[in-house]
Image (cartoon, one colour):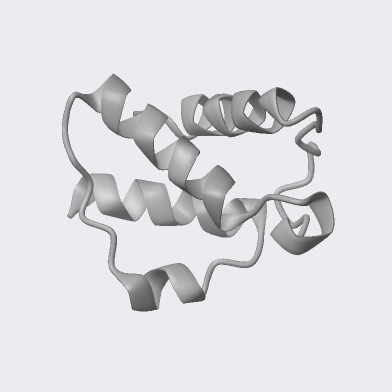
Length: 80
């Protein structure tokens, strides 16, 4: 799945919560209010579109702090 599509899905998750996704990939998740529950929702949407499960490893999740980190993480999971 293309990085732009993952970003689109992330925006949909934010919109459903009454928030918007900034254009800047360096925006911190804490600052924009993107919580772990939002990440879980994003992951489910990605898995549904891929029709495949992604293998999330907790240590990798702890290093995610920005929008770009989320996009990089999802990209890495798809290529694993």
